[in-house]
Image 1: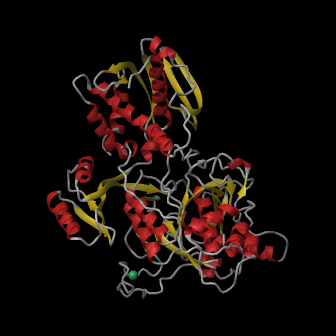
Image 2: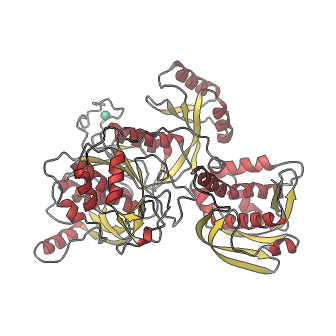
Image 3: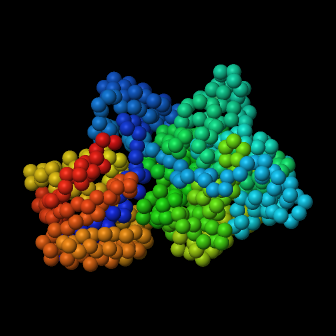
Length: 615
Ligand code: CA
């Protein structure tokens, strides 16, 4: 590509903006478990080839098999001491027996839960008693107009409960709302505490789900998140603040894969999804996210879809556009996935909520939602984590009324029943917020389809931004950029520039592959402040949109001043910010402009070195 001067200015302004704006979320979104890989082999799962490959991997590559997903030919390995993940992944991807190989990404529950207005269940009961004899309402989970009570009036009696899997931090199964309603799922084919895998599903004594984080049969919540989420799912089907409780119309299957700090891994998420589907869940609630594009996770979600299971996922809490910066698993385009944004009681988009006209589907209440908290407490929390379980609960109600519906139909009817609101006009595909009554009525009236649109998960090589996972790959890019003309200083920055540019490249590629008409410079919403020092002047810009053409910043001065600049760069976790001086230089070898770190102080260079290594 030949760069004229105008293009150079655009490029520089773009890169400078990305350095400040996008790196924190990109980097954090792609942390992974050190030294672990997930591999899918070609062919079916029980071939000699698979056994031979595993034997070879264990002996030649010194990898330890941590687990296999039966019938899928997918295997989870730990690398031997001193083995480099990037090198190993490259080798594996070149192996003709390997369909894909990827890091074991770290996933997480977004945000904190239960910090507001925490009260005891005895207080909830007291208020319930008052409400029963007066016009005072109970502690309704939301005041958003989603027509829950009207939906409940449509519920049939004596219908077998639909099972909803809560794939999360676990559930406090001893909480009164679950005990009194009898909502917790029990595995009908497992005998408790006999030390035998009675139903031969691979899990011993899994009477009430499984703890994949600790690999035991106690999916109790050691955080707050999963219990709050589970209470909302139940609360979508009945008033959980009204005592005595009604018998539950659904069942909650607690599947814990996030630990006490809200962190989990792709390998455990995949196991939880397969467990849920294979053990009878019809709706999966996924109030979590993170990691890069994962073939193994996509395979698991596609498997759920093939079994007509609805997969509801939180859009994320970064106030960002998922069309531009994908959030997984919400962004996987499997037809059974519902990506959920959060709305307020007044039908605004919640300030924290992600959105996406092409990738986020529907709004649901997620601001200040009352629900259960461990140890018989009750409290409010906000997040797309809270919006998602209303949708999961509604999907369960719809399936309860009409079990013949496919996952695809549930999604379409749920969307069709949703109510258009102005705040979502440009923010979600449906432009609408859920309406439980409309969707339940529509579900009752519908005829179930025996088939649904096909979806084949085809593995893809992750795009560069996604391979650029975590610090190890930053290091790899720097290594790659080294050359005869580079000193260690300017080489380091070339590496970073490549990484900064990657998200927009991916966004552009996605936009182009969608087949929509292309403007010269597609624009994306962004909300950030960018600061650049040019000589002794500091430029501060509020950036509202960004395109490959650049942002609204006057950058002519960069080159006029001999290309000497000072840039503010935030650390990957967003907690640090450094000022780095540098000079704009052209690398003939890389055919690219970069900023050489001339005049940068040692502490700045140390910070960059720390961000780019040692993960
Ligand atoms: Ca079992």
